[in-house]
Length: 157
Ligand SMILES: [Zn+2]
Ligand SMILES: [Zn+2]
Image (cartoon, rainbow, N blue to C red; front, side, top):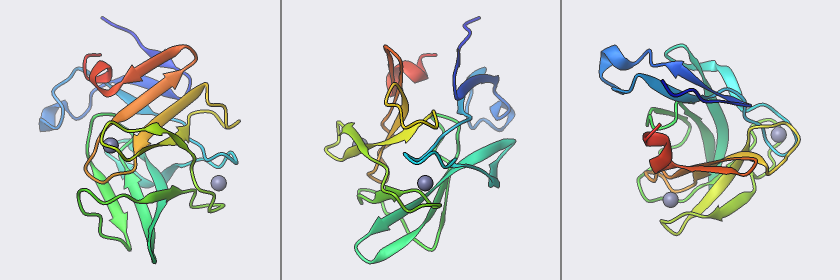
């Protein structure tokens, strides 16, 4: 069996299997995630099954609200507070604690921006999770040192 254990992320036996949410035996879960100022974006206030959610602020024109994502990569569960997200919209992503904008990492293949979620609390680009800021685009990238995992590679884990 393949093993995978990176700083800030772990492979778990998949607890969602019975619900047919994901059929895979194992899943990749984000356990640590930080803004550039080192505030944790993982919060026990929002639980997805047994996992603490990834919580951040989003802004677009004069609207803003909070979004919680499942930390399970490849799963699309999402909760929004005070905002309605429509597929195709591009939102800017901020730290809910200090309001700093999470930096762009690179362009997404859809033309929007992959936003940088640090999986270390030192704002080190050597270990990051890149998530697209377009609603409905689930493109994700993980960089850890010299390794770069793309969504299709994650799905193949
Ligand atoms: Zn912050
Ligand atoms: Zn995208």
